[in-house]
Length: 76
Image (cartoon, rainbow, N blue to C red; front, side):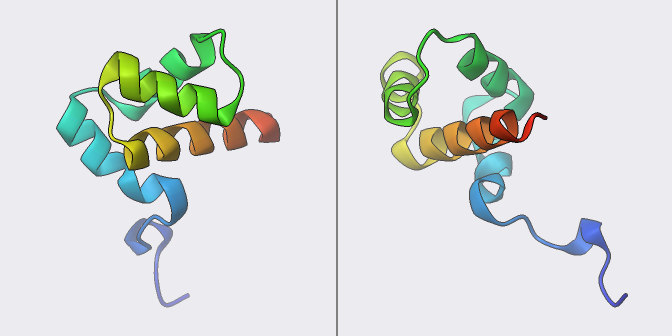
């Protein structure tokens, strides 16, 4: 193996996670808890909610929702 998993840069929604944590001051796990605790279930509704209630940018909100819903669908 030429490259360790730790050296592989994140892809997809996880690519945004360091900048989300830095910009908004909350760890990703906390954002995921908020998403999971929300009564909303649709991707677009959750993105809009994060944007309006928590002042996240569209890309960051979309990344958090996509990653969280994917984890939940996989049973993680």
